[in-house]
Image (tube, rainbow, N blue to C red; front, side):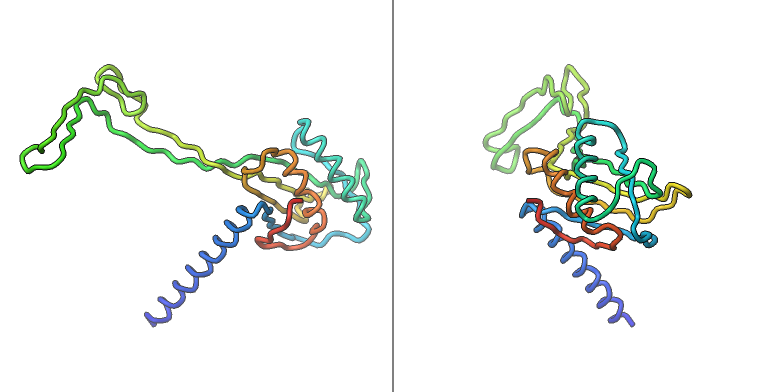
Length: 205
């Protein structure tokens, strides 16, 4: 029994590592990553209303991009269509915080058994993070690393508010223009409308 548990844990860990490796490779190669959930089938010959989460300049451009791509795929765009495509964009940053203890007196010694052959003592008068003699400091340092550009899309039934489909795409922020990157995600999203997608990579350009 124990052997089966160990084997199960090993397989789960291996699957997780392979998935992480796949995601990292996608981001490193300048590709996008897409996931989608299908809750219920879309009606035949359906029409859509495209509605951004807010009326920012970027979202207005994205709305036009969505509508053009939908028409290309044979969908109709109507002001009061029974199905509404909503979308929103975001920047996700990775952060971590390092905490420091307040230090007023610091001793630095190198070599020897009794205090070191080369011992130095200094007073820490001021440190904006850890604090010193004349201040308490912040006590922590927050470091922000590159995150992801993300585009979230939902198809909602206007009559009952239920979701038919939900999808999201991401890519890393090594790209210089977030607006161009998000626009490049739209064709892939439209081409997969109504489908279930699990961690699928795609070329942005």
